[in-house]
Amino acid sequence: MDLIAETRREQARYDRQARWYDIAVAPVEALALMGLRRRLWSAVDGSPRVLEIGVGTGRNLVHYPKGSRPVALDLSPEMLKRAARKAARDGRSVDFLLADTQHLPFRDSVFDVVLATLVFCSVPDPVRGLSEAARVCHPEGQAVFLEHVRPENPLLGKAADALNKFTSRGGEYVNRDTAASVRQARLEILREDKHRMGIVKLMRARPCVTIAAAVE
Image: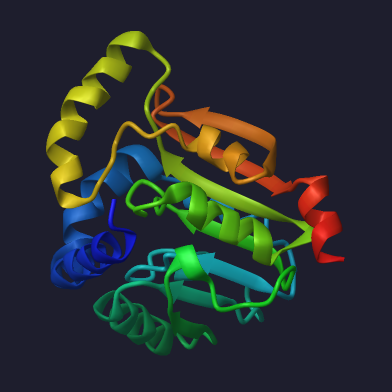
């Protein structure tokens, strides 16, 4: 895989989708994610240094803790424009940044909490992106991911494989084992909650001891 070329294609896809993205994902939000974004952000709990990877159009902004100033990045300039407009409209202080999760522009161990929602289903190299999340997360911090994954149920898993043949053409992989990718990225999963028949997982993790030692 040509990682640079595929990342550019991903950026272009989301730039094209930005205008109608919120409308397109509204059914999925209502059926699969209701309440789960709020649970994801409960992990922040006053942490001063917070990074959201893949902020998109800013669907999580409403859950940002009052008084916080997270860093929110995305690969798509058009997505970021819409997120910034929402933040300005709602009076939220956010540091927006155009960046690729596969090459995060931060020093090691700088964030207390790193979060992502439905991001690693489309990152060209998910293990590389998750490894970067582990790198910038403080050894005593946590990384929290809300992702749709390949269901463990055999029938649902086969259905996801069949659907993936079509969705992957647009850069969306619906049959990834993201929990396995998290572990390959040397993150230790502390809690793994399954939702919506196992199609959605909420995972809380922290950098493994070897990573923590490397950045000290």
